[in-house]
Image (cartoon, rainbow over all chains, first blue to last red; front, side):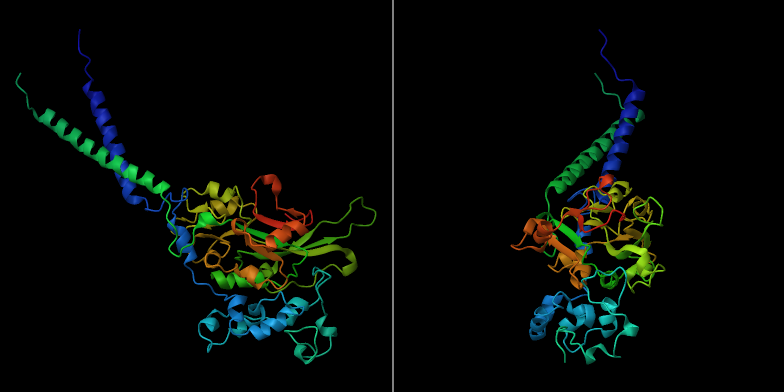
Length: 150
Length: 269
């Protein structure tokens, strides 16, 4: 009985295939980032990288650390849902260093919300600016306590 | 029997030995890679994405269309100037039907000048021609089955375990397949970096325990944000669910959005 002998061309083909697959696997292990596949088919480190951006808006609770008196007034009146930074502007730099005032240019004032618009819900108090009395809102209204008069 | 050494046989043996070594190291590398998949490490700032599940709710009856959210989003995330928005406000104006027509309403007019950032102009229709008018804030719908993730050819966009759909800017090749795939139009190509960009739920804020910028700034509490895995007592999300009948955008697509709306009209897409 003759012993089975692998034909040399097949042997060469097998070796070549193994070499190609092997070098692919080695290259892959070098090129794939370590965190790839940590949570799924993506780079797990990307989450921390996206999260590393510094916040711009400070948030209402940071204002509460120093200005709690004003926040108490605000919470008792119709403007209780307003964020400080909606009107006073971006304040992250101010919370880090109180000497730097909030960026006033990024704040916005009464008209932005209270100017009449057909799509605004009826519960919101709205005015038509050109028909409304006064050049300055604060002559008659207190922004932190809108139901009070100055 | 005498062993024969020919040039051919020794070359073959050397080749075999090299291939063997290569496969051995490859197997080791593969093993290490598999181990990495199962060992999960936490992010450097101590935030563990598997312990949170974010949800955004929008009470559309409260939106006053001030555009502060769209503006705050741009500032917070450094979105370039121009028609690029991660969140924006649309105004829907539904006119009354023409007299004598068998329609219940006219065709909706939708506009969003500058994403609603600087307010909305007076509509061309007069008040008595309008049946309904309202604002709808839009953002990434945080799909449970995101079409944008399915089409990404390089694994640059993904759905994190906490429900946020994010983009790895180092992997993104800017092919814009995802921009086309998103049924809610919430992606765009950043003109500076040439990579895709979208709402990250202010990932840098929520991982620090802050609210997303749009939620923080909204003066009408139209946006409610919370963590389903860490519900507080009296959580605003719980209240939102109890108070409202909620719906999602384009439910027929089966994307299972995690942005829930209350008080929407059927015209809203």
